[in-house]
Image 1 (cartoon, rainbow over the protein chains, first blue to last red):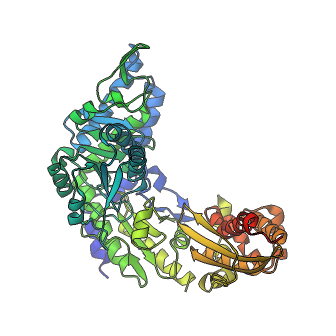
Image 2 (image 1 turned 45 degrees about the vertical axis):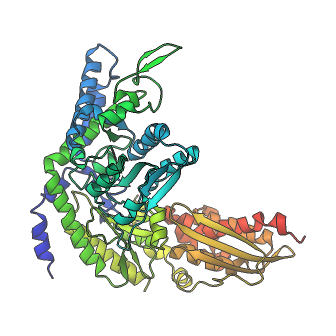
Image 3 (image 1 turned 90 degrees about the vertical axis):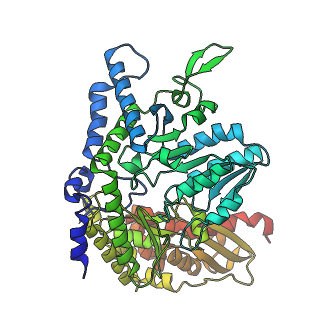
Length: 417
Length: 155
């Protein structure tokens, strides 16, 4: 067995034992077994630093931002601004004004569809997505296309779950108004060739929105190097709290866009006759935001940047390679998503064992995975399967976690033998 | 919490359930079917179509097709056996008992033995995430009995 070699190898990227101590939730048993959390693509666990930051905010800092002259309001505003700057740094945006706080990647896509989309998509126009998108990067565009009598075009994927770039290029037309594409597929793990996609789209003067929800926990992201026009992600998948997320937009693109929701903070002056909107990003942030959430997200991003995103990525690749080898070697198991470039998730089906049954059997051993269609039903249809089992990884996962998964799969095999 | 430690996988995957899941009965569309409904669990992607031949208010023939987990397949299979030949009212009553059984109704659990083979599903109540798997086929049956009734009623 080569496992001993792997075990040594994994320590080279991250000190996982130390990292595990940063995540209080991991120190528990489920059904009497040590928790093995492999559902990170659904949501990641939170380090103590994030939990503490949220508690500290409510215990010492809570006040509304951009409002008062009083000290707490000033401090809360500063903390919120710092979080925005941390996000900017995390994705290498040029300016913090390009960072719009939203509830999550879903709201970020909806925001762009409802503002940029409504302003730029007309009857007969086209929106181009791919066949591997999450529902949240399909449905907002469907709604837009329905409203505008525009057409949703879908670039196909091959049997490995990779985007067909030639077909994608052919689908770019004079009527294409926006391209929306996942950075990393949540159901297949495929890492899309973003630079090529963006290069092709820009050659047709088409802006590109990237759904980065599954990418930011695993890959260093540089939006300027990518050149994307929009980049969306959720905080809770990258060790931050739920309810907070980010829409990055190029400053010149955001500035031209109509506002999203109306309310406080997004205006600079209001009379009953006319309202003047605030500058970006505030134009898109109506109402009192999730201040604690933004601060928590900032701390989460500081945490992963402290580990080093290159090391985080290397650790993820080691786990994925090990899991691909071990799970893929089990008789009757078929991996779904075998792209050359993958990150974060291992999706598979088993002969004779439905993913839900596997999920229940693993749960009895304290192993949490996701089973189902992963909010990517068109992907399931593409592979002619109703559901998959999906194990997804994070910085605190170990090779032993993968071994536990493998043992659980064998156990399921026995139950249904 | 502690009681969950005592829940065994065998409570869910009873032998008869495993057996029906591997070899479901009435897994077909009967040639005489005159009513049908499709059930779908959007959370997990399970699909189930129930076909009925209803004559004089009774289920003369029944079959099902679809894809799903062991629990949903076994539940559909055993459902077809338990309601075949029953009147619509009787079938509805069995569903009511079954539903109470799998959702942990104390009385239904205590009287599970009266339900014959369906008593094997008592363990489902200890796995709340799986209740919908066990009831999908039954909801579909209900829909087939109610939905098409108005249009094709021979009564």
